[in-house]
Length: 172
Image (cartoon, rainbow, N blue to C red; front, side, top):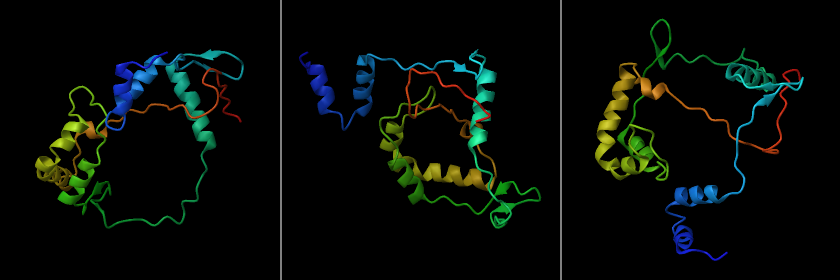
C-alpha cells in the first residue's frame, strides 16, 4: 500500500506531534483493546462494578508485604496543631514553579474547563509569580482547592494475552 502525503507529514512531524501520530496508528490498528468482565474461580463472569472492585482490592491486598513499622521516625517539624494534620514550613519558590511549568508535556490534552499544558507552558514566564503566590497561600492557610484533591485512576495493560480472561483467585 503506498504511503499517502498525510502519512508522510505525520512521520516527518512525529517529534513535535506524537499525539496525532499515535491517534492515527490506533485508528488503523486491526485489533481493538476492550476491557472484559472478570471470571471468578468457579467460572462465573463478574460484571457488577462493586464486585469487580472488591475482587481487585482482594488481589492487590494479597500481594502487598506487611512492613515493620516500629522503627519509622516521627516527623514533628513540618506539622502544626494538636491533631497533626496541617503542614507548615513548605515554601514554593518562583524558580521551582517555573521549572515545573517548563517541564509540562505539550501533547497532553486538557479536560473540559481546564487550560492545556501547551498554553500553560507558553505563558509560564507571565504566570510564575501568581502561581507561586497561590501555592504558598494554599500552604500557609492549610487549604487545598477541591479540584486538586481529585484524581482519575485508569488500569493499564501490563503483560500477558489481551484476549484471554484472567481468573482472580484471592486465595492464591
